[in-house]
Length: 567
Ligand SMILES: Cc1cc2nc3c(=O)[nH]c(=O)nc-3n(C[C@H](O)[C@H](O)[C@H](O)COP(=O)(O)OP(=O)(O)OC[C@H]3O[C@@H](n4cnc5c(N)ncnc54)[C@H](O)[C@@H]3O)c2cc1C
Image (cartoon, rainbow, N blue to C red; front, side, top):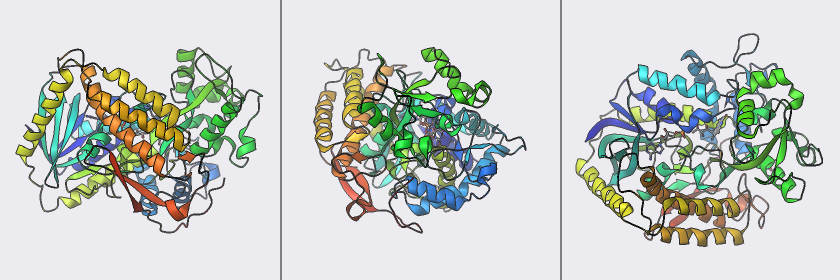
């Protein structure tokens, strides 16, 4: 059995930042199912928000204004105390990353460069060309290695051990040997990322299955605000690779098949830099009303960078240009990019407070798998990278405080009992079965895409629920092709599929119940926000029959009374 004071699951920005904050005082282990620098954080492009006031147009910016933009962007569902903390911490953590060696892009005066992003009153998104996640993750990874964090790459966590109201650790599959490894820990921290791949079309890496969220839920922990799913306005047609909001931050246009900058008709004050939920709905409306372009791969809208000129495109958006050339043979210097909206981010997640603490002693979570909640019903671009590093840091601080009197002793027998259960699950999945995990996954992705998308209705959500219940039933007959345990991706996919079905169940039920439109959750049968009935967080717990049981929790309001959200 492996044993650590603190076990971190996740080698993305959240997990690495938490590990760096704890390893001087504690014996920390970090598990990641992929090599840490292959975590989805590596793919982040556009930047990280902090009110540094470096841009000549942002001299009047402040962390308070950043907080207000975040809360307004969230359609007033964010907990305001948490949003304040994040935006106040932002400035310090960007400089900390700089001091740790992160190569940000610079203004001519040498200060960290900042670009405009959607829903922000000032240009406050700090960036490194269009590879901001890459430079941040490598900086934190180097720091974690230099500080001697014990890292276990390619260990797949298959179960979270909670017994008697305490978290004792996890059971993990060593992908290289096929061995099941019990891991005991006084404290477990999840930084396991989002669930994008429950949707067929997503900008997320294939590894973003939300298995951490699902595992916490299956172990009895509540999830919060799961119905709020972010659809990014601009993904490349066909592959759905992200075309960063940084393109529009640098001045790109959105054009319909009339050659019209249609945002003029919807949000003339913000144009292409309205928040993501709004821009996605505008694009979808243009396409639904026949003003999109037709393509064998689907309908699309154009993202036009040409007027920026080749120098700016090559300097600020080199990755975007390369992706377009490599994947669809289009050079954005010469041609507009065909884009469509698709799933991008999960506002909801494991219910934790602003210290990243769950309701259960010994279990904490941060980053995209968690819901602190700083993003409410709609996250602003550039605020997620911020969330991961701020709450990785603050989660570590909170754990340090909570362990002042010593590290709790986990119950090893409880972990061995969980190991037996996981063993049994693997045996069941390895037996011949009529269903294949990939088929069920594909059907899940399709129904989430078609019925739980940008525009939602009760009728379609109920159809999605029926389909989900059918898929859950069929999951009982899943069997993988080979019983071998090492490097058997079909086996881990089968295990993760169970979590994906559970996660999707909470998204669909939350969306059915919430009879209003707020942020990214838009009900065409209830088109307006309804603070009287719905200014509250949705909490989902797994009921005895395996279905979610929903309840509600108050939103923390400090300084900003909810008003109509206008741009
Ligand atoms: C293409 C793209 C571009 C983006 N650009 C931006 C941007 O410019 N600005 C911004 O603010 N946000 C951006 N985002 C969002 C942001 O990048 C993510 O929300 C953030 O990086 C998530 O970090 P994380 O640490 O929570 O999780 P991740 O980086 O996703 O890491 C999750 C970790 O958990 C591990 N893990 C998961 N499940 C298991 C398991 N069962 N067992 C073991 N390990 C497990 C994985 O191996 C991985 O190491 C972007 C997102 C995408 C998809």
